[in-house]
Image (cartoon, rainbow, N blue to C red; front, side, top):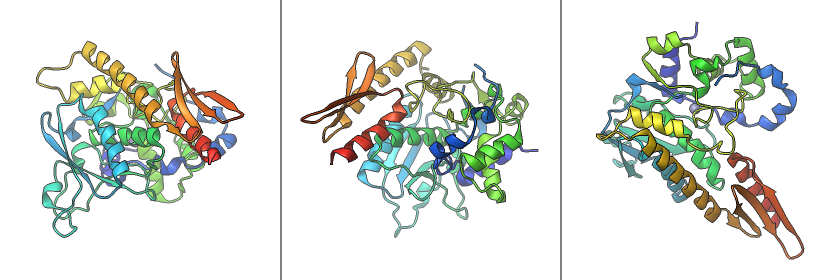
Length: 338
Ligand SMILES: [Zn+2]
C-alpha cells in the first residue's frame, strides 16, 4: 500500500512535477470526460509537523541562477507568505567558494533555481537541510517571467511546500482518487506522464493519492478543514473551483501558516483577515500597473477586471473571469498588437 512516508521522502528529491505534467491540459480536456474525473465533493491545509522549520528562525533564500526579473517575482511570492510567519528570510545570489555551494547554504536554506526544462517542484520544509554527501536539492520554477501572475502563483505554491505544506487535494476530507486506476489515467492523459516507468508512476501517486485521517495521525500531520481556495490545491483535476482568485494564496492558507509559525504575539484571526483584504487590494493595484503594453491594458470597473485593447479604429473589452486567465489573454493581446 502507498505510504505517506514515501510521499515525503520522495518529495525531498523532486516533489512535484505539476507543471511539467500540465502541458497539454487543453488538448486533453477535449479527450477526458468530466465524469471520468469523478470524486466526492466536500466542503485546510496540511502540514507535516516534523518538516516544519523552527518558528523564529532565519532562513536563507539562495538563488542558484536566474534573471533579475525572476528573482524579483519570486521574492514577491515569498513576501506573500513572509508577513504571516515568524521566520526571517535573507536573500542571497552567490554560491561562493568557486561556484560550489558554500557550506552555510546546506542548512536552513531554500535553494532556488529557474529552469524551464524542469517542472515546478520543491522539497518539503526542513528537508532542504542536507548532509555534506547529499545531492543538492532545490526548488525549481519553470515559468516564464513574462507571465507574472502565473510565475508568482506557481512560486507561491512551491514556497508553500518549502514551508512544509502538502497538497490540499490530498486532504482526507476530499477523498480524492481512492480509485488508483482512475488516478493513473489522469496522470497518463492529463499530465502526459509515461506511467509505465516506475519513477513516473511514483510521482503520480505521490502527488495525487489522498491521505486518510489515520495516516495524517500516524505521520504527525497538522490539518485544518479542506480549503477549496488553497494555493496548494490542484483545482483543475479535483472537480473543485477556486473562483476568481484562483492563483492567490487563500485566507485559510494564511490563517493556517500563521498558526504553525506563530509570532510571539500571535496574529488573531481578525487581523489575518484584514491583512488578507489589504493583500488583495495591493495585488489588484499591482496587476493594473504591470499589465499595460502596446495597445493592451488591464482596467478595473466595479468589482471586475477587464482586458482592453484600444486601437485607432477598434476597441475591445473582455471581462476576466479568473486571475489565471489574465496572462494568456494579455500575452495574446500583446502579440497581436505588434
Ligand atoms: Zn505542489
